[in-house]
Each structure stands twice: as structure tokens, then as C-alpha cells.
Length: 268
Image (cartoon, rainbow, N blue to C red):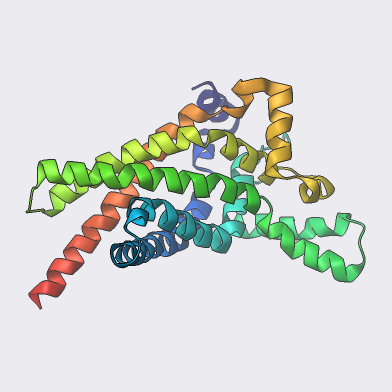
């Protein structure tokens, strides 16, 4: 609440929505890749385990979630980087206008000029900077996804069994999936908070030479030495408060749309 009040007082209330355009630009391809890939991979792993290796079936959500999240992260990492930097932008006393998404990405590319490498390497490393923090993002999102789906799948099956039995309608599906997603989002975001701290610290780093030498392990050790356990879990409350409803809304909306489309297809 202290952060909320300081931002609203010093930079204006609308600053709290900084990066919304980048968030929307990120959400569409991320969810479009992530959830269908998860569904396909989970179904394939479950079919394979039923025929060849039954012991693998309980781990289908973990494996499918990890692979699907990796695909989404790698594809959308430059937009995630732009969003993080836009949200971390501090308005100067001169009142400089905060850069937009594309200007932020171009700014990342232009930073290659400050690294003393031959020209042919500068370009390569310059484009490489668009994926700054991708390792830290994967280190955060893959465990987050694995934990999330391992909690979500049994929880929603249990809730659907309690609420619907053999019959399910859109309201029941939405309620069960939102509740399961909320619980899974809170647990997984709390467990992976140190990795989120490392990802954010890396993506807001402005020194290009330091950016190229940073990695998740080094950042975590640095935070641990300088700030202790509180530093590793800084922002855990807002992260969990965001992840719970966010996962619940995304998963429940996706499952309801699937239910409606399957029902329409069956009526044809």
C-alpha cells in the first residue's frame, strides 16, 4: 500500500496502469501458445502412459506445463522484457514522457553500441539483448507452471466431482476452474517468488556489460548476501494477490470457451 500511495502521489494514479498495452500484447500470444500446447501435450502424455507406462500419468500436468510454458516464454520474451522495463520506468523531474513498448524495445537494441565488440558481434549481441532475462524468466515460469498444474488438475477434478457429478454446465465449470486456478496461482507464485525477484532485477538492469554477465544463480546469491531472506521474497504479497485471480480468470475463461465450442460442435 505504501508503494501504491507513493506512485499515485508522485507520478499520478494512471501510472499504476503503466505497461498495460505491453501486458495485453503479451497476453494474447502467451495464452494462445501456452494453454493449447498444454492441453495437447497433457493428452498425448496421458494416452502414452495409459498404453505404455502407467506410472507416468500423475506427472503429465507437470511435464506438459513445463514444456508449454517454455515455448510461450521463448516466443514472447522480448515483449515481457519491454513490459518489465516500462513498469520500472521512473519519471524524471524534467517530466520526460515514459517510452512506449516499441520505443522501449528499440532502446534495448541501441544499448549494444556501448559494448566494445567488433561491429559484427555488436549486432548479434544487440538482438540477443531482446531476450535479456529469458533464462531467469524460464527459471521462474517453468517451476511456476509445473507447481501450478500439479495443484490445479487434482483440485479442479475434485471440485467438478463435488459440484457436477456426471453433468457439467458453464457455471459449474467456471466456478470449479476459477477456484482451482486461484489456489494453484497463490501457491505456485509464493513458492517461486525468489525467481521472480531475480528475473525482475535482471530485466531492469541498465548496464549492458553487466546484463551480459548476469545469471539467475548470481543474482539470487547477491540478493541473499545483501538483503537476506526478506530480499528474496520481496513483493511476494502483491505477486500472490495478482497470480491467484489471474490464473483463475485465464483457466476458467479458457475452459468455459472450450465447453461452449464442444457443445456447439456436438449439436451440428
